[in-house]
Image 1 (cartoon, one colour):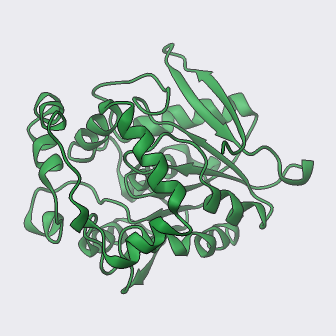
Image 2 (image 1 turned 90 degrees about the horizontal axis):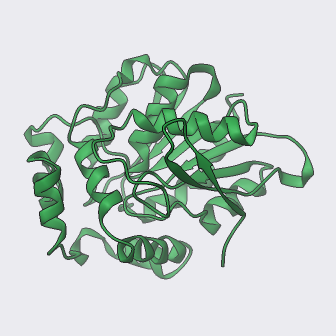
Length: 279
């Protein structure tokens, strides 16, 4: 089932961005949240995110990063480029300020918007987010299946070649993750499968961006910033949450020791409430 309204935004450099928008809640202007999807995903709105936002009077906007969900691929894009795309989406929609909430691979992109868009992002939350790449032991420690990111370190061509025979390692998810994917977050798994079926371009470019310079300084994030991290996460280990919080001047870390990579999404409603405290 499609949620919200789908549209396209043509960027200044003539790329297409696929945009999804719930529209104003209750027909009136109110707070807006930009959801930054994980990797892979189509950018479509997910029911648990929309439900948690709507009951709190929040409009949700999402867009497919280049290479995903109908958005034009942009090989060589960095994490910072998300801010350029988001500001164009917001301008077209007539939205002045918007909270940023990113999950997994969307976390760095949400933080990029906070770093580069100033007052247009009053607060940011990153759930199970990667930290800036350092290629040292703590960055890799605890990743059950880091092969794709190791390939990305060697460049886009190597990462694209890896994608030709890439398989999903089910052990990256703990039991609670699988329970979440069978239950409240089933839409997340379905959406990831649709993104994978459409081809690897978005995921390849995401992975290369994560292990390359992000094009921004997290030290410039002066807004309130929430980092939510699962203690049993085998995709983005706890070391990433610890590293992120060290960069953020007004950062707050929620460590959820029993959560994995997907089950940590149970914190999304609370994260939205936290964002709304910072108007």
